[in-house]
Image 1 (tube, rainbow, N blue to C red):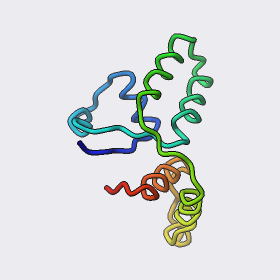
Image 2: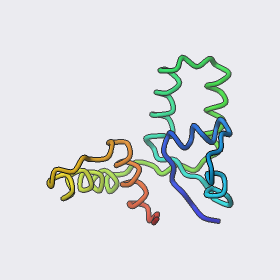
Image 3: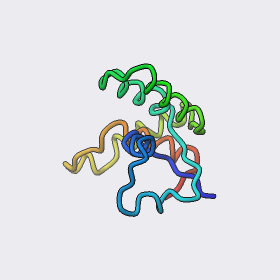
Amino acid sequence: MRDVVIDTGTASLLQRRERRRGFSGTLADTRIWLTFLHHRGRAGQWAVMREWDESRRGRLDAWTAGRPVIPYDPRIAQLWGELTSARPTLRGRPRPPQNHTWIAAAAFGTGFRW
């Protein structure tokens, strides 16, 4: 079984059971991980912004409760700082959204590779 780290958008698709072309095949036989940021933070933000009722919030809580979470630690925070100040930013290229950089730092900091 492979381990994968997903972002909030992917989590949303999985919760709604929507499948894009090739999407379900890509995640077949995987253990899906969430980062500390997405486990409660981003998921909670979506629930508030979209004014979810208690039933939908409960389904979200149940779905996230069944996933392993990469926790925050100082090493991941340091890696995030290094990633956000990397050379591509200095060369005028746009930076990825901060949340995506946190995902990358959490994944790299715990040994995930892609």
